[in-house]
Image 1 (cartoon, rainbow, N blue to C red):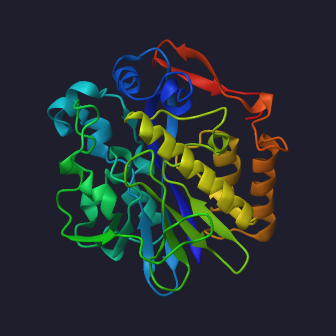
Image 2 (image 1 turned 120 degrees about the vertical axis):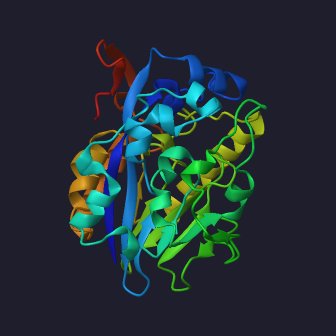
Length: 339
């Protein structure tokens, strides 16, 4: 089974959104900072995944962003969404557009009959309306929370991004426990794709475990882990905009991922927004043909191991630090001794 890693542009985010969860980016303050912190922006990649399943056919995991979001932001977003988001929030070059990348792999949108969504945030459903013909699988809890507001301030999801979908398949996680997870969903009944509930980033967020062969699993995190470094939740956390209990749910999810990591020692973790060399020099290159060899898998595992000490904590040289912004773009960088 092949997995293709497709980068669909970049999103501009505050440094604190990725790394400020232990420094006040929780609850009301997180919402406030998301809107008003304009001094610590960084650009991070957005990824989707095309899985070529031998029996089901091509399966798309998330859909990234669209040209309308990136280049027609003011006309695309209405109401509070237009006010609270920046016009240059997204960057999408022509060659990164999802349809262009599918074309390179020999597919067009009509070939995709199954789409799996980790959650409904904007940078994961931007191109979803191109697949109005498809079966779209999404966690039921995520769907039910789509009208929720954060402390009464703003809706979390933007309906026009997914309004044309007619064939929703709501996942309730009825396949029983799976290692460290109390519930799971074997999406196609063959053990090849296991959907796991990973709430915290959103109420119904889920991640996908893909078995590529008898020994290797690939864990597509969605936003349960922004980067590999977020495995060390004791010292590095992303923002959590909901009530404090949501922060503890987020921490519990990462604990379960770490336990799954121990149970499946050949599991490769692939975060959607990792902006370090791990993504660009390793993941992109190793998955270029869709096939992860044993040697490539081991190199990814070695990179991961190099970030942490024997207690699973980030080594000092791996900690992220914000570097002053580019004056023209208003965007800074994240640096550490281990890139």
